[in-house]
Image 1 (cartoon, protein in one colour):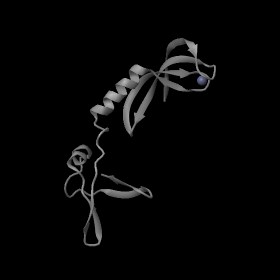
Image 2 (cartoon, rainbow, N blue to C red):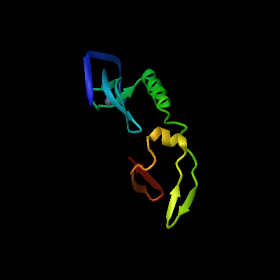
Image 3 (cartoon, rainbow, N blue to C red):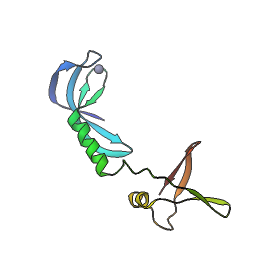
Image 4 (cartoon, helix red, strand yellow):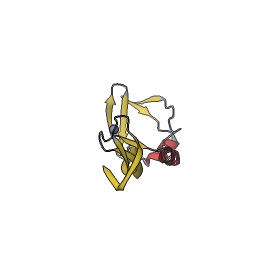
Length: 117
Ligand SMILES: [Zn+2]
């Protein structure tokens, strides 16, 4: 989604030669909605450029949400015919998964399984 601010045209052009205008764009990373952020939008090709300040802000918010550094090793064990993967407490806290919850488990790639509440 692109929203233009009142006719604020910037003096430098886009790589395509088009004109950049200040505006707002919906920013989403890691499936998390960061809301509308200030950016520069090319009126010709539609490229959006986030400035360093906004990128820094997003990085901060991502860190706050602890999306980084949450990767943990887990060993596969066995229970009857099923394999058991123990979720480390940090991941449990972050995801909100609780004991006895029903979750959906599905492969997203040959070597990757997603678990969703
Ligand atoms: Zn352009």
